[in-house]
Length: 201
Image (cartoon, rainbow, N blue to C red):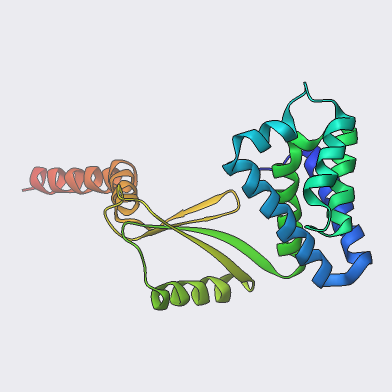
């Protein structure tokens, strides 16, 4: 999840307005509405161009946003969309939604975790991994599970910018690295010891 400075400023402002308007329930509701609008933009090219095209007159787009979303989203979300339109920032909507989502997770003591495995895991396995991550981080993990057929086995976790590689391929790479560095030193020392013992006989 990548956000920029502009997105964070707008997300923080919206978050504070939502908190003032209705506490946690409103914070969650607004976040869900933002995500639904972003999903619509990702899946509908025409709607995406409507939001982002510099050719469309802002006043006409604002009127269109009102017709599309009046009664469909909260007044706060609609006012926010109209503000972004006025400022020419609707192209940042997805980044703002991501930044807003990060604020929600931080407030509620959650952490987003991407989980990669060679094969799909069942719910029991996912719950076991979720519980172990939660115990290790002292936070509630929001787990996103993906399959990576290039993996031999094991799993990989991405938590923020940190990648934890517990895959078989990752372990093999580390073993090879250890052999070429510290392992190589051990082998050379052992060979030297054998040679020296041979010279003494």
